Structures are given as structure tokens and as C-alpha cells.
Image 1 (cartoon, rainbow, N blue to C red):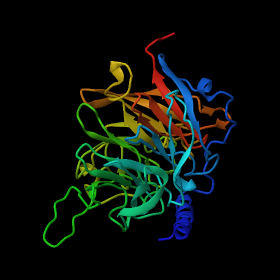
Image 2 (image 1 turned 90 degrees about the vertical axis):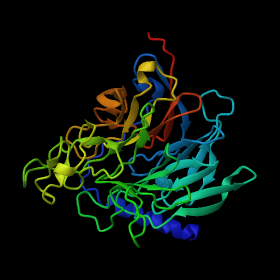
Image 3 (image 1 turned 180 degrees about the horizontal axis):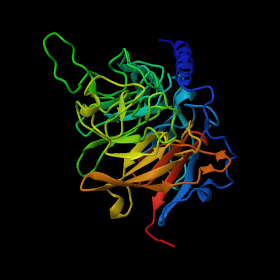
Length: 407
């Protein structure tokens, strides 16, 4: 498919994705960037933050700006720019904690998000496929694009995250097409698993003449963030709950329903959407088949409703205090449909004995009384042990380090 055709598809998908948002979507107003973002953001004692790179920001738009990240075997940070249709590389050759330049890796892509390196080559999750970028003589931009996984459903929650699991297989989130509905395509609202050759490797074994399914877990409306706990290797994922819900049939939408989920993902697990949320609570305005909610896996822990948890990373390889090593950081992108906003911050999920036990603020300061100047998206740990954080609204990549020295 030509780059021009892919651009048309990207525009169409963006319109479809925006169509799931009500016309009166109340995303917080864009406020001016602070003169010094590093001073505007508040971190726990012993941590500090600097701006690693400044890229074009999304402002009031959706799906644009720096989204998801991955470090390559070359030690450089790679970043997807979603609706901007690009992937870029941000080298820091002199190791001063600031990107030297912005190197174009690929342009004209179809709403890229998830990035993963496999055998030294960069894989990118577009909205309808996973592609492999190839370069000549080790130089970017890519000189060849090869499809690896094709035929993925697009539109709706169209952005897809891709990671290589500890089992050597590829994991891919495929969001729902809608807010609340029964999907026609069984791949919707799942996390899928594939071999490194792009073949389906889902939970259920192949039976008879049936083709192997890639579905690993279901009932996940939009699980854009996932990672593996360093001590147990268990997979955890964020999930965005449905909008405009009530605890009563015909009731008015409630700010605090449903809670956002942080799930322990297991093969064959069913996590509730579209019929139920929380501790097996059945949606009174969209009841499911008898017994459906009793069979769902409830969340391991929850976040406030509509906070929009996106990217996450565990801190096992980060240069942080020992107490943080088994914990995760989660980017709460921020609400658009609450009277009182939620999210617009990064939280720490504290683990004990391999299970999440508490949630606490880690990085705040984007949200003010008049709006928000930034929206955190994704986190990853660099080879230098620092935590890197993307902010699509402000167009920032931040670098967070730990000194252990408390004021």
C-alpha cells in the first residue's frame, strides 16, 4: 500500500476514533507551558526531573504528539508520534541527559504507537498491522517497510501497544470499537499474542481444522499499557473503563463509575467489559448473559474513574531505592468526562509479595485550577537506569533520576 493511501486511512481512523467521544467532551483546557517544566512538576524526595527532548505537542488534539517509547539495542530512545504518523529517534551521545537531535526513523505511517525491538530490528504497531522497519548501512530513515502482522481491526480505540514478552512472544493490545457494545470482531477488546514470525499464539490450542487464534485475554476495553513484574514475571496491564455509566438502571452518569482497572493478565482471562466492572459489578444499563460477571477476573487494584491509565513500566532495572524495585509507575493521561477531573499525573503502584497493595502519587503538577498544560502517556526505563516519560500534550520527553539524597 502506498504512503498516500496509508495517510488517507489514518485520517479516516482518526475521525472514527473521535466519533466515540461525545460532542461535549470536557477535556481540561490547555494552559500555557510553564517557563521551567522541571520546577513545575512535583516528585517524591530524592527524585529529580529534566526535559530530555521537546517535540511537537498535541495541544488540544487527540492521538498526536509523543506517545509510546522503547530503547533500541543501540542505546537510543525511539518514540512514536501517533497521529503525526512518524517514529523518531532521540540520541544522547554525550550522555548529558538531553537528546542531541531528533532523527526521523519513518514517516507516513498509519497512526503508529507500539514499538518493540526484535533481533535488532524495530517493530511498529500501526492501527491495522505490525510492521518491521529496515534500514541500509545502519542509517535512518527506514528504507523498507515489511508487514509482520496484518488485518488488525482499526477505528474506535485504534492505538495499539506492542511489547516482546519474557516468553519470547509478541503481545499486542487491540482496543474496543466503541464505548459499550457487543463486538462483531472477536479480536476487539483483547490482548493478543503472536510468535516472532507474526503467527497467532493465543491461549486456546488449535482444535481440528480451526485456525489458531491470537487472543490471549478478553474483556479489556482498552489496555494500552502492560509490562511484566520483575520478581514474578506476572503480566499486569492498565485498562480504560467505559464512559457515562451509572449504578442504577436509567440513572444519570456518575463521576466515580466505573473505576479504572489495573489487571493481572493471565492467559484465557476474561476481565469484564462490556457488561461489568470492579468486583464483578454488573452494569445495570448493559446487563450481560447470566453468570457472565461471576466469571470475570476482577482488577488487582483500581484507579479513579476516567483517569485514563495508559503506559506503565516496572522499575526492576531502574536506579531507584530498593523499595521501588518491584513497583510500577503508571501514566494517568487524564479525564475528559468528569465534573472533577482525575488523572493528569503519574502514580506509583506499590507491590508486596508479588501483588499490588497501594497507589500513591509519583509525579504531579500538570493539572491546575484553569486546566492542564500536559498529559503523561508512557514510561520506560533507559539503559542508564533513568525513567523516561512522554507527554503528548506538551510534546515533552522527561528524564527522571534518583539520587537518594533527600532535602
